[in-house]
Image (cartoon, rainbow, N blue to C red; front, top):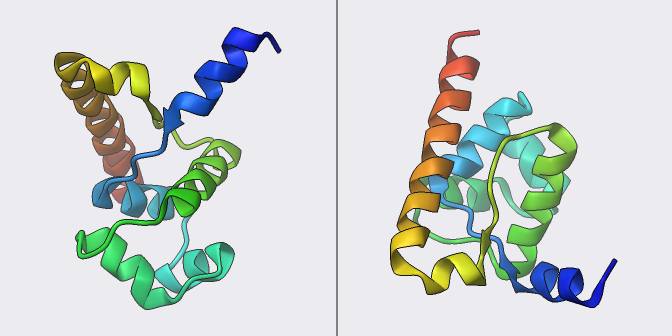
Length: 110
């Protein structure tokens, strides 16, 4: 891996919105309790993330991203390069939401 790739990798921020967390859990066909056990948090914590009452800590967001990758869950981590461009960040967020909505539709239709 080149130096430039390492720098880009370090800049990635993992922004998990409530609907994305729920979509990931449903994609994995897990209950809140099962996801909580996997992430070593309380079931109530998962509920609070999914309702938007609280946001996962940065390290937990990174873990969520790794779990999502292993599960084949389609998501886009937001990079600091994308966030710096306000217009680009909005479009990336919309694309991520569209992917989550499409995935959620597939899960609920099953």
